[in-house]
Image 1 (tube, rainbow, N blue to C red):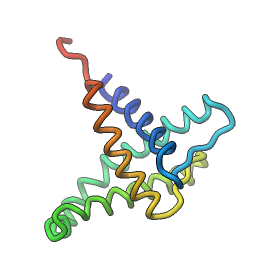
Image 2: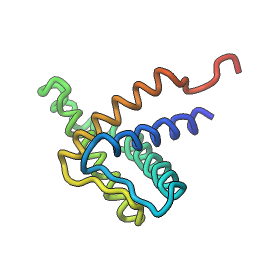
Image 3: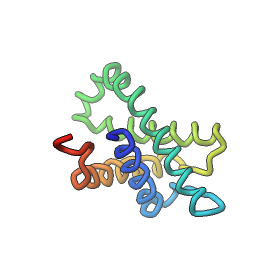
Image 4: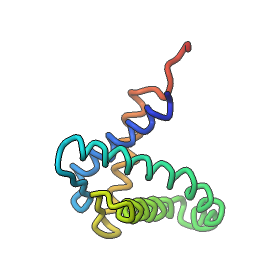
Length: 127
């Protein structure tokens, strides 16, 4: 259940990011097609972050220390671009137009995901 909630939160955050950040776009012929695209891209984004981000943190820990954590913004933007590339390979109508769109898109995604996560719990308490 927690996985589905996280996936829904990420999909909503991705949708809000497409509304706020110019250059981050999701296409589709119908509303249902767009929703499905958002869910699949959110799943790709989650897998990319779960697999690569810990490896990058270990390998690049010196850069994180030297830049006082600002290197994380660049890493997040590159992971966002990787998600765009994978979506393109899978022929999904999701597009990120360059590094700066990915940079701001990753920041908006992180903030919106955090805000939604504060309101919506990962799992139901007491079950």
